[in-house]
Image 1: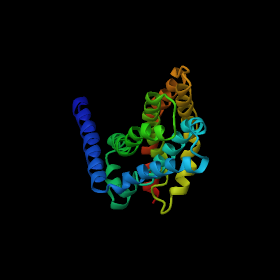
Image 2 (image 1 turned 60 degrees about the vertical axis):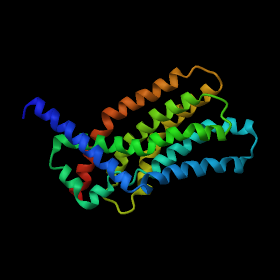
Image 3 (image 1 turned 180 degrees about the horizontal axis):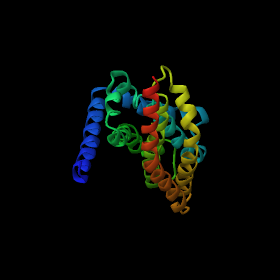
Image 4 (image 1 turned 180 degrees about the vertical axis):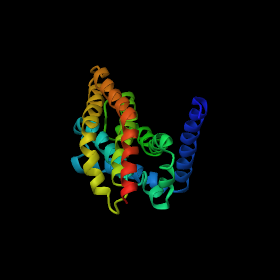
Length: 232
């Protein structure tokens, strides 16, 4: 197989998997609407719990927005590979070793497009609800980077638990410690922007996390899928 043919095969695999997953998401809107509804309802309850004072809400807003975005992303991870595992499509992907990386990457991109991106677009509205004093651009940018990183890292956990009947709790235990640095620097960037402080450092660190996850997570998830499917 020539390099050009191999490149076309990889591109075709990525595009076909991405289109398939987006089509499935359109046919089953509950899979991606549920995290958004959770994100909206959970943040809407914060003013009821801590009071409507804008000063208090403004202090809590960066951390609350990021924690709820993390939990909403986590809520949708369990089904990332499960449907393909149950209908046998995942075993077919394993037949072509060189293309599994791009299949996994395409599924992660589709997951981010239907969960992370809507969460990011919804966040400024909820920031207003929590009286966030400023930094809405930083909020969107940090969540844009952070949710993409969380989808990539979460794919490793989803791959490790794909063969388990009730792997949601184990998935949370696996990926939650890896999410903590993303949460810390993401909330820090929003908090600094709201106070008018330079946000270049936390955003740069978030970008470094994304680059590292993009390089390593699809390979790790591919290896985990091979182990779990072969051992099942």
